[in-house]
Image (tube, rainbow, N blue to C red; front, side, top):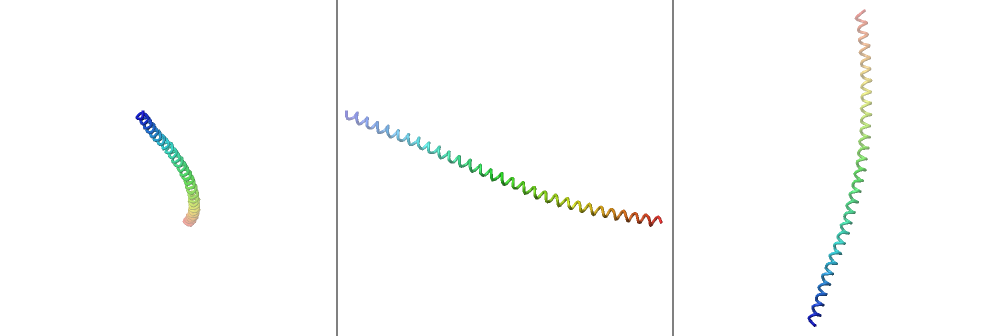
Length: 107
């Protein structure tokens, strides 16, 4: 009878230890999954913030490029207009000279 009681008590202690170990493992799994979920949320948030910064920087870069290109295009247009004016004046001078030369050679 004493051996039976001792065996039952030992069995219950072993079962309690096993249950405690299983419960601890389950708790650790839950805690790890929560930590993993928190890390995942942080990763997603950081990625979202980084993407937003990228989009803002890209838009700013495109705007700056457009402003610079517009400035350069206006400058080139003014240069070509001035060059055209110079060419027209040179052509006028040449025309007058040829006309004068033709009149003086004819006379």
